[in-house]
Length: 128
Image (cartoon, rainbow, N blue to C red; front, side):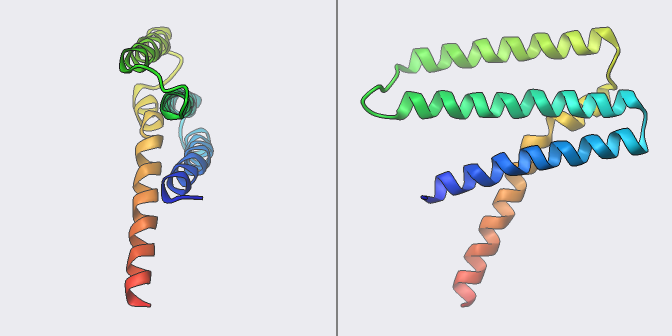
């Protein structure tokens, strides 16, 4: 497994773990609206991340290399659908906006964790 696949695997696992932990904390320590906001935002961004990874993997794997226009088109369609989901969640007032923002930050936190893990491994290699 190369470095890129390993980092993607770390991010993917961290996404689901952080989503579960943050949702549980939201439901236990705050209102159900906050917990639902965290869960909904986390699900939206995690599923979006997986779809983006799949789109790029298919687009960049020979011999079926896709056109840039096709990849960008899929990206914008996914972006518009995500915006509609977030709008519907906010308009229905079933989720807390702060919880939703926290949930939408799950992938960023996962990338930060993966970066720290890589830095730790580089430092350990240089020290050893």
